[in-house]
Length: 350
Image (cartoon, rainbow, N blue to C red; front, side):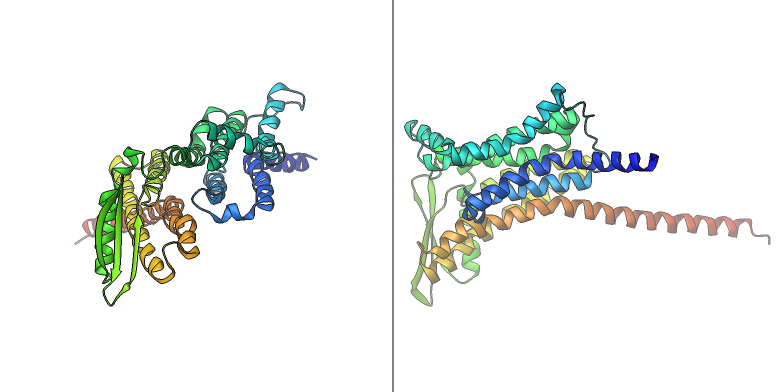
């Protein structure tokens, strides 16, 4: 009987830990069945929400033995009812969004407010609302410590929603703080294209750099794109900064190591974005700048490159730390063995 109770308690505790993951997995599956195409878009789509689920799962895997949910009282207890309500909120929001006209109401309110990309505001709002729901359920289930433990997925979702909102309100590179780094990025992308054998020229179109690349072997093969901050990958740099800082803050390593990890990760993220811009031009030359191939690369494959790197980088850090500890242990064992041999030689009678 005691073993049965222990088994029940252990698996009940495990299920409680999985509740936040399940609370979002169900509505996202529902959204996929309603609009599968939205999950095929990185920019202004729902692919980022899949990475959000992955980050929750990663956090659970890494902290499974550490995180402990608050004790659940009777089903009629206030805290229990509040937690159940919070867990149901994402699903309720999906119902309101798709069946009761909430998405239309958000879009119409945005249009009347003068938002340029008012049609995308419903999705941006969805990201922000999901982030708030996630923080609420984590707080109710794990307390203040839980908010710290799950800060990476929460901030990831919130910053994506904020970036979508900024681009909807200030399109075409009008948001100057994010646009400051774009000219340098465009210049470096032109350098990469020159190294690939293309001829390039840079101009300006409003607040955006206009980069043209031409194949010298065939002048008819040319492509021109105006580069705004979303196209230049500024959003991925911001996402990397938030995710990396929150992750490294919890790592038990020196500040020098944290600085080195952050610098390397940021440099690779920036390099990927430069290569991402350069990759547009051969596609534009072969299929046309307004082709479906260019659109797909712009909204999905291009943003996918840095995001995959960002979500994998914490695993790279953990793997490198594990490898470094093993190397340090081997060195310590060899040094200890060497000291023992020295002592034996010293004590050996002549």
